[in-house]
Length: 70
Image (cartoon, rainbow, N blue to C red; front, side, top):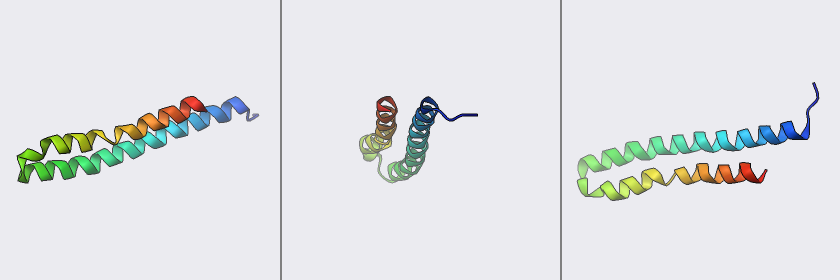
């Protein structure tokens, strides 16, 4: 079996998307748990918690941009 340039490019794209996907999921898990704990103590923190929970999604967008550029 021969390794081609197209195959390595496809593998690189998959690693970029999968790596950023796993990193984003881990970050959302940690931030989400902390946000729920903070909102239990103070309900006015909902807006800040929502923004901080959505923020890790930009990591996946960066991974998608890298995959497109490859």
